[in-house]
Length: 170
Image (cartoon, rainbow, N blue to C red):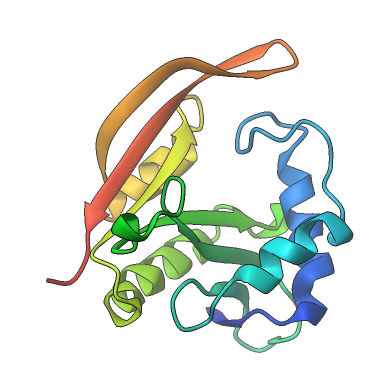
């Protein structure tokens, strides 16, 4: 299956929220315990800056209006200006498109595009139990930068968090 991506529009927000919410029940990919709403994610979406911290939606190459995943370049840590050269990536895929190459495509594109956004490092946090995501990021040159034991409690499912990152461009 061939994938492409484009800059997310406000019309994509319901699909983005649906994809994100589909990850919550597994307690393997996000610390949210309850589903989020489109209204609650509107401020996050509007705060994204296509020139510095874009949100992309993935889609099958021949279906550009059907969102199959998304990737966002997020401010690193607390968003203080000194961290502007590092971005925190978030990647979420529609359940029907996991394991089909879309994550690889989006991550590869993000690594190539990051220097154009003034980014020198990209990082993310992944639950230690989320082996598919850890494999995906390691396959793209990410290394473990730290491990936070038992920092997440998802209604009794306690998770360690692995912090991974890599430099981009130079």
